[in-house]
Image 1 (cartoon, one colour):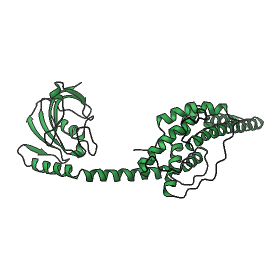
Image 2 (cartoon, one colour):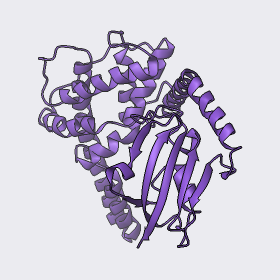
Image 3 (cartoon, helix red, strand yellow):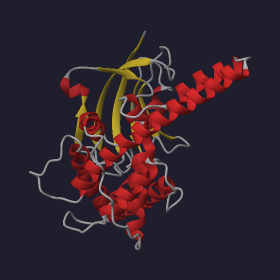
Length: 337
């Protein structure tokens, strides 16, 4: 998880829900009961609601012309006011600007109330047949996002009771520009996510301790073998054939044949076996390859011994387990112009 953003599905659903909101400005949003933020989880859920509103929702609503941006109107009138030499004309423009801004803000507030009403009612029901116009689609998406957020960030299962009112309160406070109960909500959510990621990485690394240990032993033993060169980065290579052609740079595209195995000899990928060389940018591959290619003249064939830190790290890449050191036989065929 990186930063928390509204999903594309949520944003798409807003575009339909707002049509309903515009047609029902006379409907008043229900008065919510006071929401209690008492636990640490309540706080993070409130902060999550704030982050949803602050990271793109308002701008998207302006893009859809659901709420109007007052900046352009203010700028236009302020330029006219600044250029007015007649005091009466200046006063007239100032009054006209105030009237327009008041009208825009009232319209914005009505649309926001309808949007929040739909979200609120969907968050408080699990009845999939319940529908309150298209506005409820936003709540549907937020429900799903919240369950996922709860599982990933709070460690809850799908049956766990959540204080969804805390999320709605944070969302409402932020989008209506009300005072926030928790400052720096985005930082709070991101800090929780970062801590969780670190914990997950530590657990994953502990579970892969044997793989890491075997890889370390292999690299240490391999470094003592004839012809093997160990670079400061930890990358090792052995020259089978030294070419005499040009040496690629970071901006080049190269054509290569390769045969990749785990340190136990298991083949995980091979253009040689497929009978088809591959072309790619020098910087579009794992770091171990990027480093080696910028030392290999065209026509060279090297064996690369790549530590996991220069390969796929803690990622599970299909047949490549996390923290795997890799071996590649690489033949540099050409630099493509």
